[in-house]
Image (cartoon, rainbow, N blue to C red):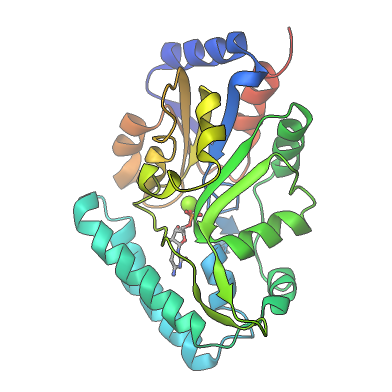
Length: 282
Ligand SMILES: Nc1ccn([C@@H]2O[C@H](COP(=O)(O)O)[C@@H](O)[C@H]2O)c(=O)n1
Ligand SMILES: [Mg+2]
């Protein structure tokens, strides 16, 4: 595990200020895939919430092949450090739209979801239970803002017994017909590079987000950095980034953008350590 911090004094100052502001001012805004869930599973890539569906038995062999082709074409674009966000955005819309269209042709049942998740290889990062349970104990909202599939990620945290009432999710949700068959995905489409105010301002969480001015932001993509942009008067924000892929090429950019950068870390230990300090009275 490597923890990299460009400006350690600044980070210490933010953490101290968060503690002084108190529990009632704090919220955690987190990405889901590859941030709360693991990137590596026993030497292989862990599935994202999309991949869980893509690889499941409810998708035909041909469908699986097409979804994999999309992943192999668009994922390198998603993480390409040489392309600008402006270049990437329309391509991400293309990827998500094509994938959602393919999934919607597969006759996936709402009632299949618990089994699909149970049979998947998904793993939450070590220490997830400590994180979710501590935030619940201290009544700190955990806002999960994900470009993944909301129905799948909710089921993952439900099966892990940590879907507490302080957890709210904004993500891409499936739209089922009266027979419980997937027909389409609900709007707005959330992809890696529109996780910002444009999506958030129409959600019921917008008001709640506004009152909590100390923010711990957790992400793994450059697109996750704008997840807190909807909060109007942020006083303290600590951005913690998991640098999972193309580590050497992306290190400098991550260090410029995130306050704390975690490399080769499949745990939530650093986040838990900070929360332990911020949320206790000593
Ligand atoms: N068809 C797709 C589209 C996206 N992905 C991956 O999902 C991740 C986005 O979800 P977050 O919870 O991290 O916002 C992102 O890493 C994409 O690579 C996918 O696997 N399949
Ligand atoms: Mg992610």
